[in-house]
Length: 171
Image: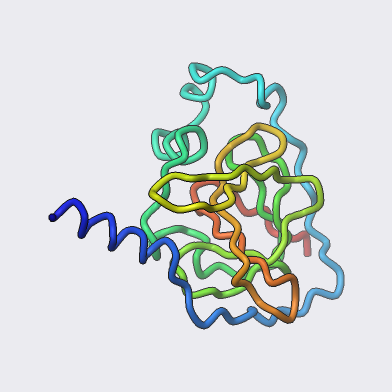
């Protein structure tokens, strides 16, 4: 009974996000310099190689598809101008003007940079969701849902802070 209760709480936590509010940031010219991808880190990189270059937490999330606890990530309430890149390989994933406050506990974006991510059906935890992964290295980023801001794309890329790094815009 306790296990069922824990699973139910986890499911509610993962699927409930109310009151999405687009963070209003004026981005006249997103001058963030897109970083160069880390050489040699891609879909062909072995697990042993990933374990050498990633922290234990990064490896668990990016390679083993774990999820960080809600409301704990470094980028949950982060709204500076710049670009978010894959923490594993440096692939540019999201521009800061796509980030919004979804109040769900994880960084949320309404769109990814074109061609930067790939999608896979995820049937774990008794749900059918769409997993989002880095198109360069296959790292697990999170999931995409269709409950994002209606005035933009309607999408919510619910992303683990551990799976991304922020590159500030050049001033």
